[in-house]
Length: 501
Ligand code: ADP
Image 1 (cartoon, rainbow, N blue to C red):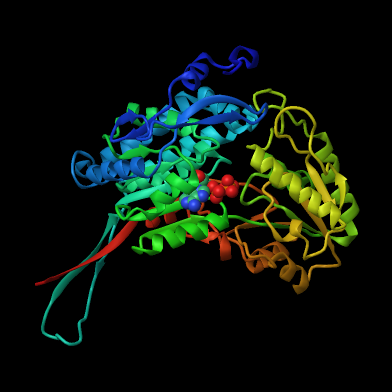
Image 2 (image 1 turned 90 degrees about the vertical axis):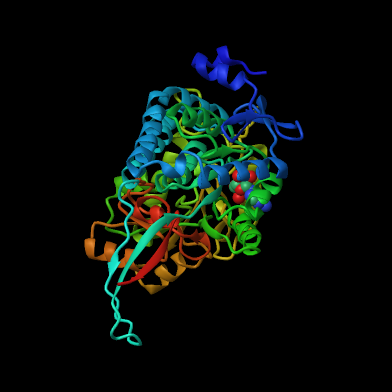
């Protein structure tokens, strides 16, 4: 089924991938109620590497009930905040202990370069749990002096409590499978919620291994349930399930809207981290070397499969040729290959669907008159490889400018000088997830940052993430902020208590 020896994988990874992959429900690993499974592919070769249980409505229902039981009774709600924090911390430790194994698994399943999985995905996932562990003991309400004008003689003691929101359905994408699981699970567990997690069907393996580590850390049964399956079936059933108090979703804006509709029926709470078409603005006084390397990595990191990818590159005319020439040279130098090859800098697109989608955008852009100064096509042979691409001569109404490509394709757009029109063009998108600005002038940098309508603005850097820094979108890029202090608010609700004295 897979050629483990050929790619020199850690023996624990080949053993795990070769096992039977079931659903984690109520602390037990079980087959899907229908008995069905679905294949998981290596995107570098198109070959099947594993079969995974295909969860559906009935499995989601069982998982939600298990999560409800764990939330209402049993050991979880009785744990002290300190004990809860210790469990979350331990999960972070276990991820670090299994760093190499998880990195290989992620690279094999998703296609990302092993060196990136080792340096970013896995350590960031561990750090997220470590960061959130500290919050478990710092969830506080306030005491409030109230006046109550209609009862002037009466006295009251009023205060607020922050309580866990309850049972949470979490639906995650395939671009950072382990890290997205961490972003979702970390705050949910720190606040005392229970979870039904649905990983993306393209990349379920690291979440399943994480499920084993969650058990090893000692979380009570049913606190985290993992149901692998497809979006339209298992995902939709989870978003609509009346036993869920909140649904947290990361993925496309299109599916985000379906999640909102599914959740509307019983008005469950919703948080969304959706698509982007992020502008990256380079001014004439930028450090050119820094800006070339930074704007190239803003789009090519993770093969452009990032919701915050800097896909619209606005460059001041006087440096346009130099900057864009530099980015094109960077693109041409990128070593594209299987993620598990230690020399690979960019792996394949995650799936055949994604590969066809990105190639479709390239064809559309080129046929509408855009020109590729680097890349522009696919790579021949096995696997879902696309060339890192830099487009010029685009028009504002082209599909490659308006729509999220989610691939290694950047459009470079010149502007005469920094004025309101540039800011308007940068903000001319339905999205508002992230943006970048490159300049040595600190006043301009902060002024532009203030005008860009995005949840994150990077100045002279890009793709800087930290567990302490809130991340989320303006406009159709989402609702709510993940990570940092804000994530605790997403998973708690406030209760006002008022006592007559
Ligand atoms: P992409 O288009 O990049 O694959 P999606 O938004 O389709 O991203 O997928 C992100 C996650 O949403 C995946 O876990 C997927 O299974 C899930 N999903 C897809 N469609 C639905 C749906 N109708 N309801 C709930 N979840 C869905």
